[in-house]
Image (cartoon, rainbow, N blue to C red; front, side, top):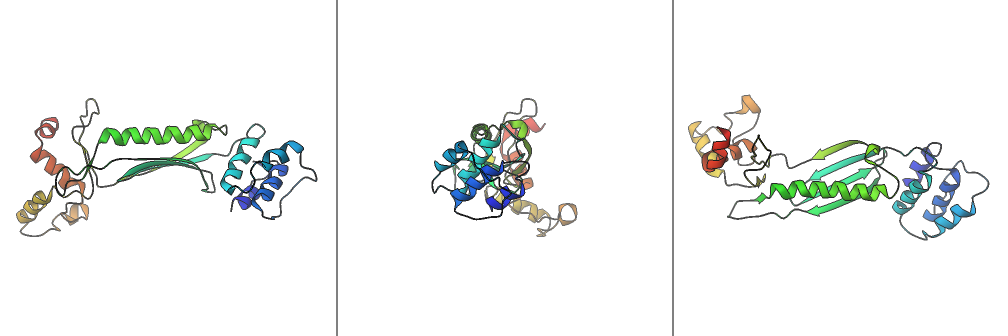
Length: 230
């Protein structure tokens, strides 16, 4: 896949002599628009790769060409998950070039309670982005080369924070936390047993999964959240 991508971008990314060496390193033969001669410097540099993975060849190819050609744009992806955070930088063919991942410890202070420290979530995102960008910087990339970033998060996990200073008031209550079970049962009882009473408004049933019932639990059980809300 890498060689096909390299071949497709030979005119804008890499000298053909570099592509010839990449092909030799990866042990593949592909039709490339190569010059008849490959410089001794290029051969020497690529000989160091031996039988390493094609990913390393791609990164070296980018590094060697960065001083002669405009760098290809990068696309970033930040995944803030239940147990870890990671940031990945891709090229425009969605080949993974650089990444970093950090675990975010989950706390279960009571049966059915599942939470994260919101500060650790933010710090892990900062670290993953910083480290991945440091790896990219070794190949000459800067933040200006990252043209777009997509974010994946936990959707129904939620946290309350102060609007005046942005400081969190609560831990992150995770999507699979069921501390709001009584809240849901009370709402269903008020709706005469109809857990789909809010379907017309939001298309969702009353459930511990969704963040609205978690916020209701916060307001009913955490005085600091109720005070901040007022």
